[in-house]
Amino acid sequence: MDALAAEYADRVDFVAPAWKSSPEATRERAAELFSSGEIMWGLDEDEDIFARYGVPYQPVTVLIAADDTVVEAWPGTRPETDIRQAIEQLIEISGS
Image (cartoon, rainbow, N blue to C red; front, side, top):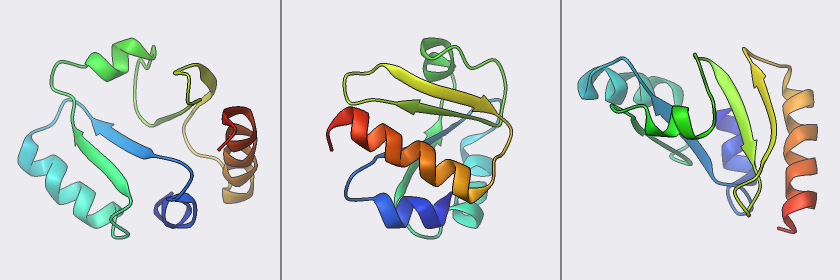
């Protein structure tokens, strides 16, 4: 995901909230996973983001259009080609 975030940074915002962790552990894990610096990350201590988009567990990917509409969501991981295709569709829908 980090490589895709670097590639699409000019058209898509990538956000990676964590939950059920500590700020220190979240910071350490983000440093391991997000070396591009293009993924915004943080600890959603109150689980507001997860509740807003109906995310019951991690990992899950949620694609959100510019108008805040959930376009697609899936649990677990997917091949990069599938994610790339979903991002391209998101860009098309959002008009970015």
